[in-house]
Length: 266
Image (spheres, rainbow, N blue to C red):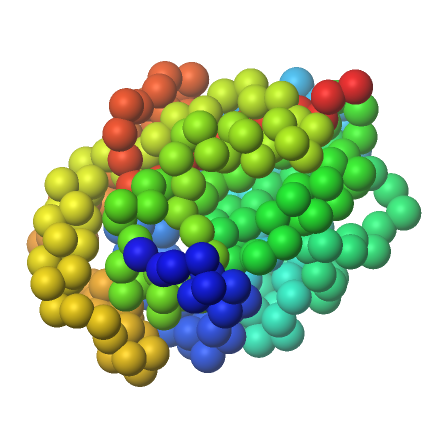
């Protein structure tokens, strides 16, 4: 777990991992399970919107989630936004539709969105409050914000350091951050519950190794993207079932990630 001084040095994103992400995302249990959840929630929310609604994904990366958002929103315009060009080059190949290179703290749009998604991005940004307020300003009346973030600071590890995370969140912490930025939480649940014991044990074992250099942390993090065929298939099935359950409006009491649906207070 980083000290307050060390946290000030974190943030940002290692754009060099786009090649690896684009290679494994569509097969890796973690990304596939998360996509099932995102699709289910967005499909339900978008079904209540008028035709020609607008959706924005902030930090669309390689476009893996973006393609799922477009599948979930056949009646709307789905825009992908990414700070790093390396991600946009992949997103352009994966999914046809408008893409914008911009910063989440200064969104360059003159029309508001009915849905804004930010999936495992907020934890990378030091300016948490500024970013959430910026998102709120871009939401239409009754618009919704959908977030996923990593859960629980006690799960902090080399993976967070290599990923340039600033923080992990408890349910209370993400509620507080959203409230301070002018949002009301409509739905919040933990997810990735079936891998929680594995992650907790691996983090405990990892803490016994002591401090890692940035390069060591990066190599350890990349190992977590490896595909172990039998294990990957089993976890994909389990996480897909879990994700469908949560997308149906049920809440899980533990997990390694959080999903939140919030609306801007009026």
